Length: 539
Image 1 (tube, helix red, strand yellow):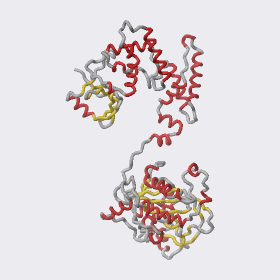
Image 2 (image 1 turned 60 degrees about the horizontal axis):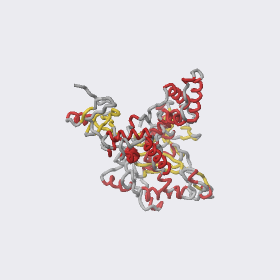
Image 3 (image 1 turned 135 degrees about the vertical axis):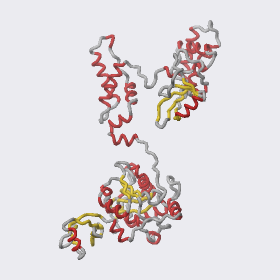
C-alpha cells in the first residue's frame, strides 16, 4: 500500500489524459496541466478525490524514463501540438524513399545522397525547415520508425528532454557571474541595455580567466544569452527598480469591474477637469484660456446631476457651485437653453466619492456633508479607477462635444498638429454653458450607455416611477448656507472682522457673552460677501 498526495509536480491519469499538478490554489482548488497539450485549468480537490475513489483517476508512480509504463494510455497523433506533428511528418517525408529499400540496399552513400537532396530542397523552398537533417539523424529516425511498427508517433520529438526554456546550458560559475552582474547593474533606475550587461559580464569573465590555467578558462556567453537571462527575470522587480513602486504597481495591477449601486444618488462621483477648449471673452472675442469643469454624476443611472464651468482653479468654490447646481431642481431648461428634454435629476446624495484634492479633504466639504447627511468617501491617492464613471464621462465629453468645436485643444499636441486653437476660438462662456446643457440632456442622457446597459434618462425615469423620491433641502437659501465655506472668528464688541470687512448685528451681543472670548463658526459664500452666517451652539 502506498500513500499519495495531490502536491505540486504530482502526475496522474484522469479520463484517459495525463495531468500534472502545477500549483495549489486557495479554496481547495488545484491548477493542473495536460502533459501533452500544456493546457491548464483549475479544478476543485473534491472532484479529483471523487474521481480517485470511483476508479476514474490513478496516480502515476515515478519510473525510469528509459522504461515507460506500458499500461499508461498513449496519446494519438492528433493529440500532439501542430508544430510537433508537422516536424514528424517532415521526418517521415525525409526517410520515406529509404524505407522502400531493404537494410542491405540502404548504404551510407544513399543516405548521404538523400541528406544532400534535402539540403538543396531547403535552400530552394523557404517554407521547408531551415535546419537540414544529418545522416545520423536519418539513421535514428529510420530505426525508431521501424521499431515502432511504422508508427508516426515514434518520430515526434521528445521536447521535454531537449533542454529549452529556463534550462541553463552554461557552467555554474558563468551563470553565477551573469546573475551577479544583472543584480548589480540592471536593477538600477538608470537606463541600462543588454549590451551594457554583456560587456560587464565579458569583463568579469576576463578577470576570472587571468587566475585560471589555459585548460580551465571560461568562455563568455553570447549577447542573446544575456538578453534571455534578463527577460527571464521577474517583471515586477524590474519595474520597481526602473520606475518605482507606484508606477510598477499601476502597470502590473489588473483592475476589476466596480459594483455600482442600483438606487439613484446612493453613490455620486465628482471631479474636475480642464476642458479641451479655448473660450473667448463675450465683449472683445479675445481668447481667455481653457475653463475648468466641475462635474457631478450619479453612478446608478449615469444620469448627469450638475456641473460648474468657470476660470476658477479647482477649489471648494467650484465644488460648492457644482453641488448646489446638482441638488436643486433645474427649472425650465427648455426655455432657457433650448434643450429638447427636461433636467430630471435633483436631490441630496447619500454618498459622495471624491479624490484627495485639497478642495475635497478640507473642513469646508466635510462640514457641508455632515450638515446635509452625505457620507463623504475619499478614494486612495492616485487611484482614478475608483471614480471610473466620472473619469469616463470626461472622455465622452471631450470626444463627443469639445473636440468638434472651433478652438478645441484636443487631448494632446499630436492630435492638434498645426491646428491653431487660439485663432479658431469663437465660443464664450454663455455659449459653452448652453452647449453643455444640450449635450448632457439631449445627447448623453438620451444615448445608450454600454456600461449601464440602458439609456440614462430612461433608467432614472424607471426608478423614480417605482417610488424613489430624493432627499431635498428645506430651501435654496438654506442649501446655500450649508454649502458655504467654513471658518472661525472671535466676536468682538464691534462685530466680526473677516476678509478685511466688518460684520455686525444686535444678535451677536448675547452670543458674545455666552462664548466668553471663544471662537464661533461662521459660514460664507465666496461669491457674495454681503453677509455671513454665524453658528449659534445654543440653538
